[in-house]
Image (cartoon, rainbow, N blue to C red; front, side, top):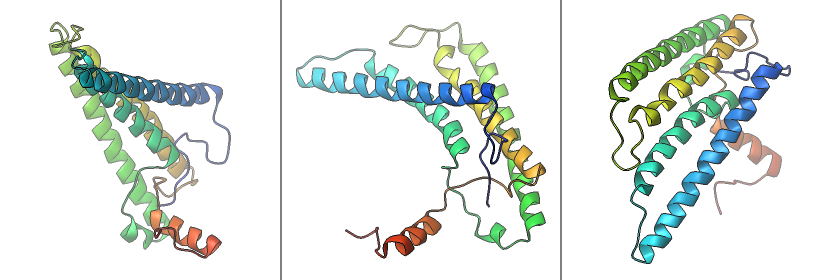
Length: 193
């Protein structure tokens, strides 16, 4: 499906509050990636020297989960998720928009279920500590409602674009089209060495 950015502002600059969320999200992703890389590097070096940091593996797992869930929202915003839309593309535009709204609605319902389930789980496990870091067990799981709230923001933007006739559905990656355009522009097959 053809789509517009998930900020509800196809062709226009998003409002200042949304730009702040975008920049904050990008900054958090960069910090998480840097921290994960640093901790993993130090742990590998220390293991090579016969030592290790006891809590490094647990922290790496939590940082990776945070990175993935922030990344889901970011990828939705920039249209980096892949999708299979060969059949949907065959539909007339009004039907594509209807299918797009149904898909977005289902995604919104799923995100809401994840948020509600995560809050219930966090509430139950908060009083327990993690094994190595000794922080409340619910703390690492806060990323689920945070990440899904960001996803909800993106999904509402997509739905808004569809309703305002600015998009047919999700903006998804189209590797086949990109490869054809690249081949047409360069005259060579970039999939071969």
